[in-house]
Structures are given as C-alpha cells and as structure tokens.
Length: 75
Image 1 (cartoon, one colour):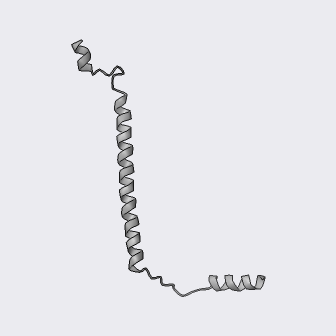
Image 2 (cartoon, one colour; image 1 turned 180 degrees about the horizontal axis):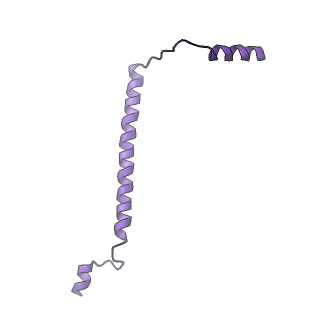
Image 3 (cartoon, one colour; image 1 turned 120 degrees about the horizontal axis):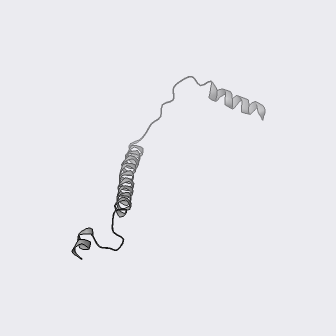
C-alpha cells in the first residue's frame, strides 16, 4: 500500500511537461453567463442597499407626526 502511494505521489510531483486544457464553446458560454449574472446581481444588490440606506438616512430628518415643516408653519 505504501509503495503504491509513493509511486503515485512521485509521478504527480515529477511531472515536468506542460498540461494543456481544452475549453469547448459550451463551457465558454457558461463562464460568460456566470460573469454577466455576477455583475447584474452585484448591481441589483448595491442598488437595493443604497436605496435602503438612503431611506434610513433621510428618515432621521423626517417629522415623526407625518407633517412636513411647511405644514407645521401653516398651523
């Protein structure tokens, strides 16, 4: 068992020639779709978080009674 493990590890570690990988068109289109989906998803996530933080920030300056400052002056 140890001899087989030694032989396998030796053949993996001493490989000196380059390995060439082939990506067929189907794989390329999946990778392209993955990248486009990641960009669109990140954009939607950022848009949602920006809008949510905007409303939190502007909520600090809103009146609690529901009246605007102009309505309060008219009373």
